[in-house]
Length: 206
Length: 107
Image 1 (cartoon, chains in turn brown, purple):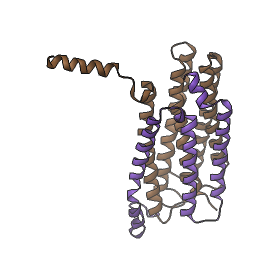
Image 2 (image 1 turned 135 degrees about the horizontal axis):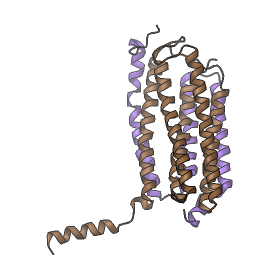
Image 3 (image 1 turned 45 degrees about the vertical axis):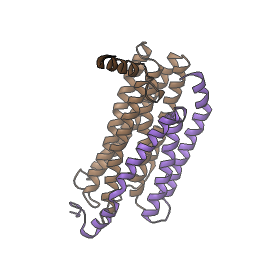
């Protein structure tokens, strides 16, 4: 057998092998993205903790938790509606799946609007990227960076929900695509569970 | 997802149960925020609760529990290793308290 034959045989064996970890390629790609994105958020949160720990006059500007509690409730509920949408899609209930995906997108929009309203209130109180009336200017930079990165993810998720939902309804996407998008949406929810205690709750005025 | 996998991941009842648990754990974080304890203790307690929340969300909402065990371990070991690697510089943040971080002066 020639070297070329051996090489071809090797390629054929590679092509016939099953997918890595026996999961669909799209889902694996989304998981790899999520792992990479976890590192991004973790780096931001660790850097934030590092600065907060090393800065004596760190501000505590949050007086009440109503807004952040409501945002948390909305995001957690949107994860549940996403799951129900996926179950409907798996059951072949196309109209039901579309409806639940649109509800999830609507909850994402409400979350984003509440977030922007909170930003506006802080900006009205004099908080910018580099200074604020309460303490070190680093607070504004880290707060807007972390919550802004999360808000960007939510906004992208809403756009993806609308696009995938419409295409699913049109028959171009199937339940597997909804599952892959669901992974992303749950990840956004998961990140919020770390942002809330570190960025909001540890900076409450007592 | 096949029928067997669907069965393994549980029905809508399990999703609702996990959702309620996540809401309750989020509530616990808010309660911790109003406890009269020092920042280090508060941080530790909140982080533990957040890790439990993240674990529940990954295992049941993201269906990691229904995937192959090899994949579950790949995700967990890889992610935890990198996250632990990021904890290397904490002692340096305490050193900054003495000299103060750059641009940290209140103006």
